Length: 186
Image (cartoon, rainbow, N blue to C red; front, side, top):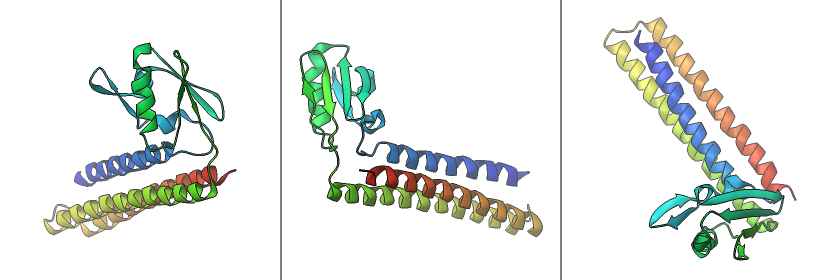
């Protein structure tokens, strides 16, 4: 039956969208150190853009510090430069063996900007989920028009797509609320 496949595909696409929003929110900087905030940083490691976690050992020894011990000490300056230019307002310090990345507390102004950015990510996710719903609804209407689907089946499938949409948007909203509390926590 085509509606089961359509519902499964719709669910997968919505899940992918929510996962993207959750990943975007996780990489946002809060007042405490988190390895997830460094996920977007790439280091020019032997002419190959490489994620930070693949050039050394990352650790969070306390809530205000991240340490990175590179496997190749000759890459210290390249790693430092990548962190400085990442836009996270971090200032790494290098002692020749380890890079220490202090995570300073956020100012009130910076917190408000981060909350706005979090809302932007969440809204983009909600719009993407609604677009997936629109595509699914259009396919259902097409199946009805081509008489491959009865009106009752279409009505049930539309209701199921709407429920999926509501569930995924609720998950985005819940994650946004948690991230907002995390950012505003002093």
